Image (spheres, rainbow, N blue to C red):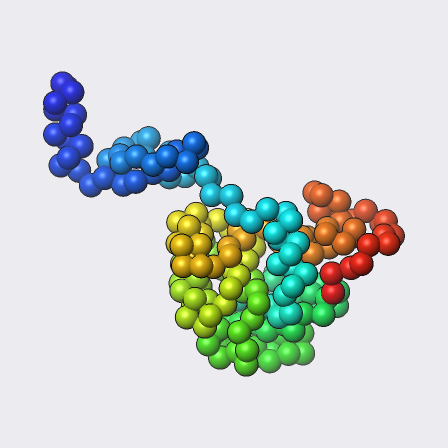
Length: 199
C-alpha cells in the first residue's frame, strides 16, 4: 500500500491518542497493534514514596470500598491491620454487607458520616472510574487503589479533576514499611525502630 493509501486508511479509522514513554502523545488507528501495545504499557507514575508517606501521615480517616466480611479476602486482612495498627477512623463500604469487624458497613461513599481523607479501593480495574466519580462527588482528595489493580485512564482522569491517585499499592504494606515494620518488598523485618510510627 502506498503512503497515500495508508494516510487515507488512517483518516477513515477512529484514531486514539496514546502516550509514549517520553511523555509525548500521538494519534494512531484504534485497532492497530501498536496502539493496543502502547495503551497497555504503564506510563503513569503517581505520587512518590515521600508523597505517599505524607498522605498516610496526614490522613485521619480511611474508607475501604469493596471491604469484605470474608476473612480470606485481602480487604479484610488490610482492614484488620488498619483497625489494630493505626488511629484512622475506618469506614467500610459494601452494599452487600451490614457489619465488618464489629463496625457498621455503608452502601456507598455518599452514606458516610464524613468525607474520608483516603478512599482505599478493592474493586476490579473496570470499576475504578465509577469509584473515582463517587469520590469526586463527595469531595474526597485521595483515591488509593490496592495492589494488583491498575486503570491508567482512570488515574489520569482523577488527577485531571484534582484528585491524588495512588494505584497498584497496598496501603497496609506502605503504612507498615514507612515506620520500619516491613522491608521494602513487604516482608516483616522484625526490627524495633526509634522512628515514630504512623498511627
